[in-house]
Image 1 (cartoon, rainbow, N blue to C red):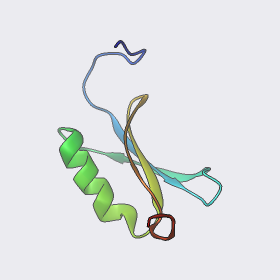
Image 2: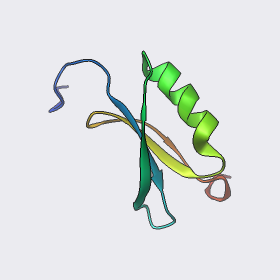
Image 3: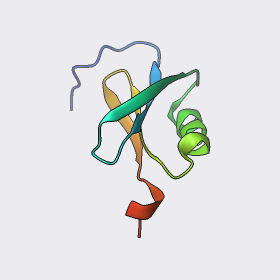
Length: 69
């Protein structure tokens, strides 16, 4: 499987989404790999829906606490 994303160093960005799935704010993350970026994102979730990207690649999605289960 190929990707349209350029092959370069990781560029992690965390997007905080509202109830309609719109971006409310974003935060750049300085992490060495996906696992470290996911751990950092989980620490910032605080019950919110978040999406973690490396450039144009979706790495991980965290659903708001009320949406899970």
